[in-house]
Amino acid sequence: MYLKVSRNPQPVAVIPNTTEKSKSYEIHRNTTVYNRSLEECWISRSREDFRACLKQYLCEVENSSAGNACPSCGSGCKLCPSHWQLHRDKCYWLSKKAKDWTMGHEDCSRKNSHLLMIQDWEEMVFIQNITKQQNEVWIGLNITSPGRSWTWVDGSPLNKKLFTVLGPAEEKSCAAIRNNKIQSESCLTRYCWICQKEAVLI
Image (tube, rainbow, N blue to C red; front, side, top):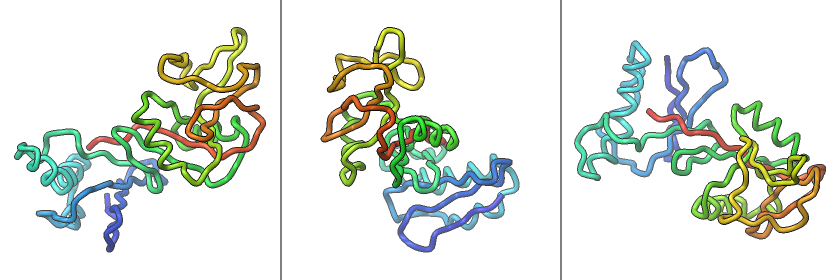
């Protein structure tokens, strides 16, 4: 088990020595004050020791500021894969290339994730902030037939009280974010896409 430590103010990349050799996690942190050197975690002999060391290193300042002196308590330590962005309890990855909806969906699956499923307006605002440079971005919403109803990639229906999809609800239609709104598009159109997965909690 080992660590890869960044020597600059950027987030630290942590790589557990597991069977998933390609998996690395990016630690997002909001403070530069630490009571313990991360390099001490190198000597950890077990996964639990490794996690306990990281938890104390990463969580102590955050929890103590909230009036909790227990470095092992709380849920503030969440990890995302490298090059993903952490928001609340989820990780987000924005592609740099444009592909059709199905190819974007398959790419997210290869990353052990899924196309973005937006749950509320607060999450929508976050997505708007990270997609400012993109005109259109695929999300995990498409038309399933029969019925021609908008359905998220996990099979759940769109909550029309929260979001409205502009444009026709036709077969082989997929949803993209355009101009801060959800727009119906042909699934064959080539756009960038957003993958989403649960953050790892330590």
